[in-house]
Length: 499
Ligand SMILES: C[S@@+](CC[C@H](N)C(=O)[O-])C[C@H]1O[C@@H](n2cnc3c(N)ncnc32)[C@H](O)[C@@H]1O
Image (tube, rainbow, N blue to C red; front, side, top):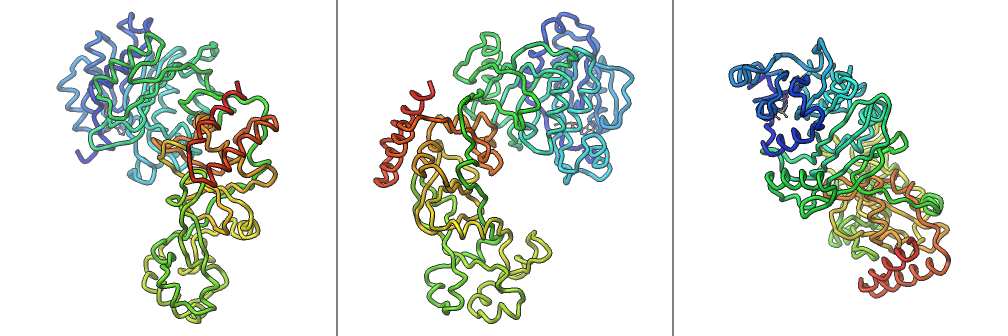
């Protein structure tokens, strides 16, 4: 099948679940016009025929798959064409399917230009173009039911999709399947959504299901999703809640319940927040105690100590990494040779270091990105809070140090300027903050992504002084005694105060 792009078959239970999402009024009219975009081997066609729909079309780029469908589904009107440039003669009551997912960079050249034409940027995925095109091809009141990666909820370059959805209708249902293994051999975070095209938008909430256990079998996904939607209640497989439709103010979309904080200050108004220093070649720049002993005094000027994600224990840090931080103090290989032990250590990696992505003014032996270095040095003596930029742990790992340690590339740094650092530390490690952060869109699969952008704008409740002091005291005690037992008390104080 040389002419296919990303053919992956959708499991039958997932297809049947998606078909069950079609509105009742449409299900009762068997002749509604339906299109399966990228119909593959026709798994959606089969389910639609089984539900007795009579007016079904399918489009498929691959000749082989198209012929397969022709043979197996003679009742269906099929097109062997490229959906992205296909001139449809009509609009549809329903477009359903599992479009291809392939990032622009991995697409064949012939398809790339069509994606850019529809989406408008090269940082996109072919499924973005499928969503945009499908919305255009829907009738007023028409429905789009797709299973796609979760990434269009947060990706900066997918804003065009989020805007298109907000401008043209409403999301009625989202089923967040997280990293559940849905497709053979593939493991993207996927979600199923149902969009309805409406020029006048009703005040209707989105019904959101989120899977609890990534190992759930497809049969249970089908059964329990249908059950949760019909009972409007959570069950053992899915959480259930309803929320207002996203709007243009929601920069990032999320499947977590909104947490509204009405009286607040922004974290960026009381703290300095910045990303860590990126070496771009850890193996070359990390240095052992044994190697340090061999350095001469001039060479030792380049030594720094930094915190990596693995040193963040939650509340406190443990250990650090020794690095040779090579910046513009050395500007040529000739100058580098004045530091013979450093030269010897780095030179063996020269070839691989030279192909790193960095500004043209950098030399092969420089660190890749030293954003904030000057600022960080000026704040080095202050208490600093580090958090892994991507974290899988089940409790937050904001970790404070009073030592002069820098952040490495895999942590984000928060340096409190006006508030007590222990108050900030305690609050950021609370369960309330974790849920709030997820509701602000900080999730990436089963991990939380702490980004400078989201963290800067997080709202911190204006607690009264007594509450702030209690949080500070508990947090300091956890930090000093390396004992989490008081963690729960912080959660209790915060929920009592917020309620
Ligand atoms: C992820 S597969 C899904 C197939 C099928 N819908 C299913 O769920 O089993 C995506 C399908 O879209 C087809 N496809 C890819 N690019 C296409 C395009 N530009 N126009 C039409 N079909 C396309 C692929 O050949 C593949 O069969």
